[in-house]
Amino acid sequence: MLAANAAVTGQLPVPEPPNSGFAIYFGAAGKTPGQRFVVINVLNAPPAATTLDGSSALKAGELQLDSYAENQIAARKLSDAVRDTFKDYGGVLGDGTTIQFTEVTVDRDAGYEVGGTGYVYRTMVRMTAMYTEAQQ
Image (tube, rainbow, N blue to C red; front, side):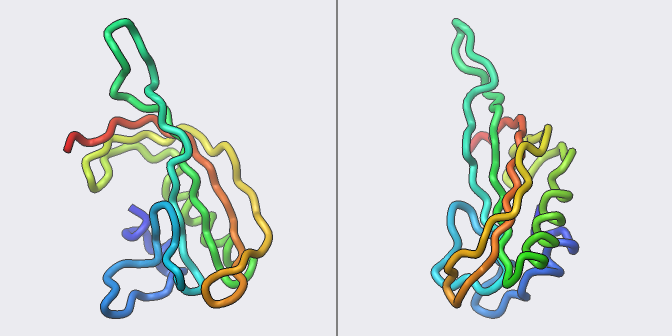
């Protein structure tokens, strides 16, 4: 979804061979990710309900979307585009997961961090979502 949004990808470096995708990572970035990139983490994903019949397939999750750039203003612009991509989104993701984002719980700037090629600045957005994972 992020890779299809020009407001996000317009701020990320264009992939060079042999890479085929924009700098969007799950869990952690590579060792030298470049100056601008996004990292997505699932922080919490418990079942939305549990009964005597077992746990619901519906999950009440919280995702953290970290946007990194060479300065704080660029990190904020990238983070705003990422946030706006998911804010109020409901639908089916590429892997078949059905999701509805419900609210932004945190939207903050962080200081600089040591990156693979120098210092990078981070802006963090946390969002809650209700979702049902695709059956594999």
